Picture 1: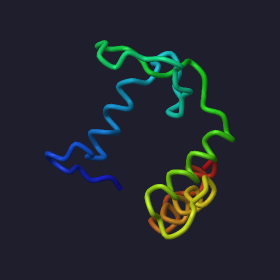
Picture 2: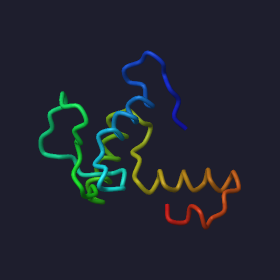
Picture 3: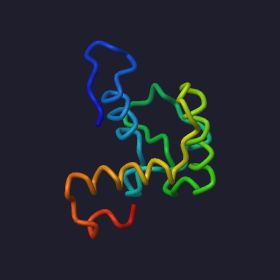
Length: 101
């Protein structure tokens, strides 16, 4: 769950909204490959290509994020997916809905 932190420049909700506003609208995946160059002062410019981020790239980023934020352990894509599945199972969401996670 993500909570808004009013007035904080690092608010996770505002960061997520900013991120999604820069996604390439021609591609539906949320994990898109960043463009080589962007001009962040151009209104409405997309920052991402019309292709997904590679699986290996995403896996490396998850490891770096967990290390750089001082987490108690190094998280992987699988550990986050497993946590999500466990939570969904505990709130009685049918497995058919989340079996692709």
